[in-house]
Image (cartoon, rainbow, N blue to C red; front, top):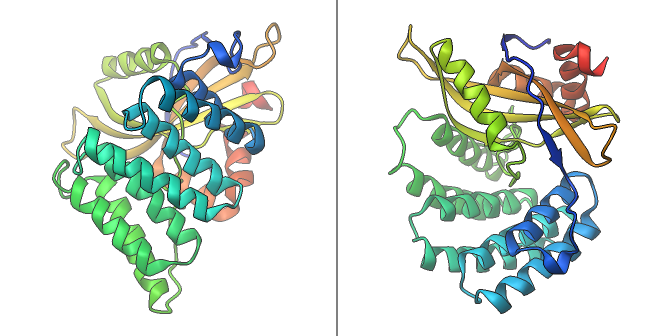
Length: 298
């Protein structure tokens, strides 16, 4: 199934360097944490673990053991441990991150809900469906007070709950939890000026996009990376809110290894994005992204 896309953004040239210019010891906690996530996304989990461990130590020493940046590092540590198949360590990191976040941001904060979703996904991956249901319901109880009842974010959590309950009862759900990557913590890597340029151009066409949320980047061989973002779209001709995916396409910068130049942006339907993943996983998604941006990747 090919993508249906319906808007092309004018060319944007912004360079994003994936590697820092300074040594890790000179980096802030946030910079180290972001670097760990980037390393994980390019399949270097061992280096990611080393980097996030350094970030956590720096946060605890300089900011305190109950600082929100310490919780941020612990959440990333949980993601990394989950990636390297250390579920018990991942669970411990998530729970400590949740404990700190509940104190600093509040038990009913969006940050707490996000950590609960990660923890629920961890239990799901370990086939601990009853525990996953309990955690997902805690997350749902938080976000139900923040968004309208028909908000797609609530529907995503409800779907995960239904899937886990089906599996708990021996049923075979047609769609597995996390097909849309909702269970993963993905770093926001597209520069703000690129996103703001896209939003401004959309506004000129009476299209309003809100709640941009990053999904896992897709590397297109050695040619570049596409950064998908889930978003909500509303036009002036309808009150209905639609789920879409914004694709930010970049190419490798020939003058700076490890950097990328953002070249184009298109919108596709969220269902098309999910369909590609369901049909053939990342390989199918990659194939269809090449067809969306033939001038960049063919």
